[in-house]
Structure formats: C-alpha cells, structure tokens
Length: 371
DNA sequence: CTAGACTTTCCTGATT
DNA sequence: AAATCAGGAAAGTCTA
Image (cartoon, rainbow, N blue to C red; front, side, top):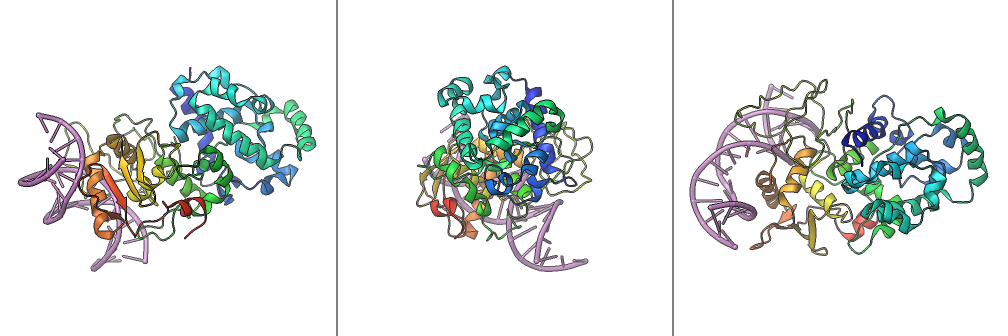
C-alpha cells in the first residue's frame, strides 16, 4: 500500500521542479500547452531533449524510469483524486518498456479505476512520441541510462495535463486526442477579474490542478502552493517559511484556539482563481471530478453540486482556507447572479446555471480554441 | 493613494 | 430539524 509519505515524497519531487521560480525548466518555461499535450515535435526532434529530460512528460513512455513512472502515476492519482492507499507501491515499480507492454486489462487489474485513465494516457503518449521513430535513438539512450542511471535523477512530474478535453460524452479516449489543443484556452481570457490562466503554464497548472486537488507540496515559490493533504478538515498547515497569505474577505471573528497566522509573504496563492472558474473546471472534467458535481444540462450550462461540502472543502483547499464551507461558497456563488456569470435556477437546490458572462464551459470552448 | 472588483465572513429570515 | 437559499453589511486583498 502507498503510505501517505510515499505519495507525498513523490509528489514533492514531482512538483518541485515545476514550481521552481528560478529553475523553470522547459516544463514551465516552454509553453508546451501542458504536459501530456506537449507537442511531440518539440521533444522528439532532438536526441538532446531526451538526454536532458528527466521528466516523464518530456520523453516517451518507453524511456521512463521507475521514478518517472511513479511520478506519472502520482500525477494521475492527484488529478483524479484517486485514493492512492488502494495502490500497491510494488506494482508500480517497473520500467518504461515493461509499462508499455501492459495491456489495458493488466492496468485495470493493477490500478483499478485509475487503470483506464493510465491506459488512455499511455496510449496517447505513445502515439504522441511515435512508437517507432525514435526507437533506435531511444534504444541507444536506454543503454546509456542503463549505464548511468544518475542521469535520470528523480524530479519532474508535473501538472496539468488533466485539463484535457471533456465533453461529457467524450471519455478519456477523446480527451487524449484533444488534450494537446486544450491548454491554450483552458481558461478564458475574457475574465473580468484578475487575469486568469494564461499567465504561464504554471499558473494554469495551478488553476486546474489546484482545482482538482493536485497539490503542490513544499513549493518554495509559493505561487499557489496548496498543502492540505486531502479533503478532510485540516487546520492550517504549519508553514515554516512561507506563512499563509492573508485571505481575502472579512476576517473571521477570533476563533477559540486558532490564532490567526500572521502573514508576511504575501504571495498570490489565489491569483488567477475565481470561484466560478474553479467550478467550471471541475465540471468540464467529469472524469476527474469524482462525482462532486454534474451537469444537469450541459447545453444550457445548468449544473448541480452533488457533494456541496466536498466542493467547498476543495475550494478552501485551493484558497488555503480550511474554514470554507458550502454556505460561504454559495454566498459567493450568489454574488455571481448580479454579474451574470451565473443565472438563478429557481426551486432547485444546489443547482446553478452559467450565465452569459461566463465562458469556457461549452463544448466548443472546451474542445477547441476559443470563442 | 484611491476606487473598484472580488471574496470571505456573519447574520437574519425564508424555504424546502 | 437540517440544509439551502437570499441578501445585506462589513472588511480585507488585489489590480488598475
């Protein structure tokens, strides 16, 4: 079984590089439209890429190390909020070629419901890199890595390919196909608040992965680092260095035991995150939302909270506000009526409807660029 | 510095 | 009775 520490360690290493402000490697510096979506051409073309890359999303699955595979799995665990405790760590230990040989059934039996997701992503990645083209070069590096494993130091991992396509009818297969296109426009630019999305691959990562619970443990950059471990209520973490930023909104009345944490570094944990976008992003990724919400009428933009408190907790996690609850979240939702980001749906509890000032949730917006 | 946008927190009262 | 819904009010962060 995976210990939380395993996962956390993996995630830490997996995310660290991505959020390093100073060491923004290609992963972050290159607007490669998201990991899974990284155009094959930008990586396949040069063998140096292969040499330099130690990240799973920057090289073909055939060349993943055990570490890469763990990162890849943990990425999907995070993205889908899969309960990793059900996984057997040992069964995750394999090299790229072995992984690539696994059948769908094998993945399903090993990883349960996560298996389908892994399988589809693997298919897509293999197709993306071309299973044959690099064969020779890769074989060469295989042997090289074999001899110098330290070249492939752990790190890497990443972020958000999770935002793949997602029309409720299209399953993981289609998202694999469209994922590449997605990133450019996942977050609509016409947002009347802060600039959301599009600030950098990192911010996009932050937006969606945060939305879906992808943590960014120990991120020294603090740009949106979330540290809660799960949906369960958790007091503010004891940030050592990076104190919690002061939250927006009216301060809570002093609570009994919880001294307000004085904020010093005032980073933008919440930057680029608007509640309605957070909600939207959960909705447009049905394969990842774990039944938190559902569309009642996708065409009309009508949706419903299925697990209102869980969504609120997630939102709180996103904003690093452990006291968020549905009551408060819903208040914020109601403010959207006036701005016509949401429209009222009378008489139906937990049901809301996107308004004309919202965007990014329609099929065409999700599947294609823009509108 | 200021104003406006946004979110959070609190609250009272109504509805389901 | 417990959840939700409705909004007003206040207060704080952020951006322009």
